[in-house]
Amino acid sequence: MTLAIDRIHRIDALEGLSRLEPKSVDLVVTDPPYNIASTSKTTVRHGKIVSTMEAWGAWDCLHPFDHDVLIAQVISQCYRVLKPGGALYMFTAREDSGFFVRRAVERGFTYRNQVVMVKKNPLPSFAKSNYRSGFEICFYVSKGKPATFNFISQPECVNVYAHATKHRLTDHPTEKPLGMIRRLVLVSSNEGDLVLDPFMGSGTTAVAAKQTGRHFLGFDTSPEYVAMANRRLKELDAGEAA
Image (cartoon, rainbow, N blue to C red):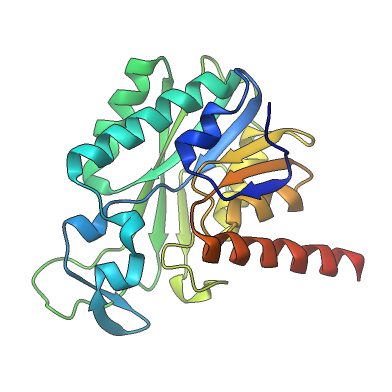
């Protein structure tokens, strides 16, 4: 492994993955771009209608074919760097979930489940031309039989997580709830394990790993988001020191 762990590196996901040794990672939890800006011109942010490019940026605007190729390559690299029995949790757009699960199975992963994040207070529909978006999907696959599955409790080990979207901790437009990510980390890794997020974004995976005694490693191309994630980690250190 040529990249320092317990750090977020400002590099492309595929570049970062290519620099990792095979079978060096215990768990991958990641939330890649959904490519929304390539298919939708407007979205809602902070209660206002804005362009998707303004809300998400160029990182979420690829040609659909290029996006499919990117995610398939990331899945393949995740398989390479995971240890036998390691798990991959990947959020996807609802329309893409089955497609990327098939790519994962073709690469060698074993399909395990889908984990659903239910939004208790989804954004309102201003156009009123479709159903409000009240959930997101994360698929769960493993490299063979899972080496780790810590069944915490019956209530905790349900594949539905209810989340109040107003309780975001950062200004990142696609931040996932810390409680949900921490639950995935607790279930599918052990203390001292290495948790990887190739699309680190606001740093939630790193924070969850650090809070639970795991090592972390992350990649992101945005200086703004890398700085955002590092601030959260520093605040965590300060809180622990206090």
